[in-house]
Amino acid sequence: MSQQSLIARLTLSVTNHNLGLYYRKEGKSQRDLSVLLRSNMDLALDCFKAYPRDGRVIHFVINAALELGDLQHKSKGLKAECDTYTRVISQFGLLNNMRLDQQLCVDMAMIHTKCGQCQADNNIRQFRDALRNLDIAQKLWSSLAQNTKNPEFQKNAETVAKMMKQIGK
Image 1 (spheres, rainbow, N blue to C red):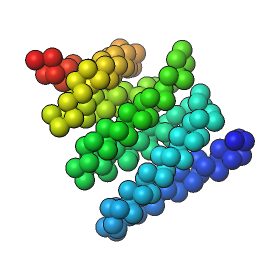
Image 2 (cartoon, rainbow, N blue to C red; image 1 turned 180 degrees about the vertical axis):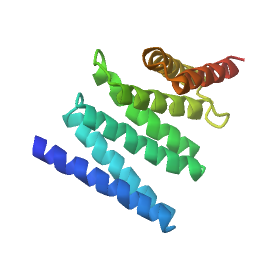
Image 3 (cartoon, rainbow, N blue to C red; image 1 turned 120 degrees about the horizontal axis):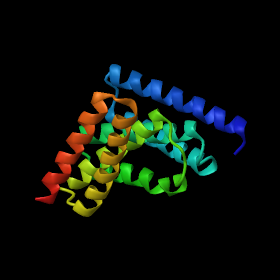
């Protein structure tokens, strides 16, 4: 995939995102919105396979997964939501030893938090995986809090730590 093709796909992603906002605002069918967001995530993963260390693409993938996962969560599709987050996180092995900017670190913490929450749900019961994802999220939130002195990041780290203790009981 060329850089020009990547830019075109990133532009299409923005268009899909805006179309999704329009669908929500106008009360369009959940099925149409789901198809749009799922195709947007597939597009993001294609770009990630071609450019796995490009920060724009990583943001694109995470945001597409979070948006689709949010829709699935609202429609009681907990298993689908969990699968969406797990699918994206499974691609992150390519990011080892990569320096993360603050926003990318926030995105990574958020997707690990959401994935861990899904996995810990009594309907999913993947507690070992949940603890692993929540541990990563807690470390990311703590690191963000320490480096930025942002109290919201510290609150997130503490919330994730409480979730982990609940699972451990």
